[in-house]
Image (tube, rainbow, N blue to C red; front, side, top):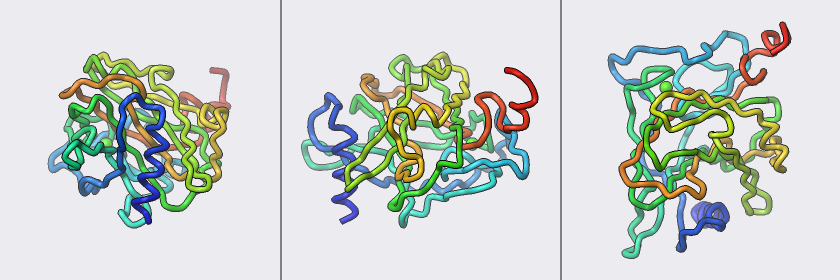
Length: 245
Ligand SMILES: [Ca+2]
């Protein structure tokens, strides 16, 4: 039943894609947050301050937070999206490994694109969670690959087993594929203004290539991803309120 639902969800996600044929969610490997031996621990661009609200959604973050919703492979999943081939085997849209080039913790996650022409991944919860107390998403990306000129960042609701996913474009928040790290901060109001209901989230994070044509072998690094409460530049309301920006 779960697989049927996931297939249904993903069919809805890709229903507007140009590529024909079914796609499936698939759990590919153990994405435990193990640290690389010897990696120097970095606090991220905005180090966590004890007592402030910060939500670790179980991927792309290693440091401290006020709340964690850890991937448990029981009802909280991280999927690299894949595509069924002509011989009915499945091929993932990218391969994910740890990378010592990082901005937070001891590692980032390195996406190496396969030859399917697109990429996608996401955190998916079997049960909806209320994220309406959070105001902003912070994410860090780095790429020097020509085809990774943008990243679609999504969240979703599931209503009567139909997925309603809303996306924003990382380039609208400063991402460039210029080979440097870019911190992307998204007000969650940019999702709710498109109809997303933050009180009933089933996927807190979807990353995808949208309509881009992704080249095999192209790369993307992802790190320092969390939800917080505050302003676009400052983490804490008190900081933002301390003066005009
Ligand atoms: Ca990290």
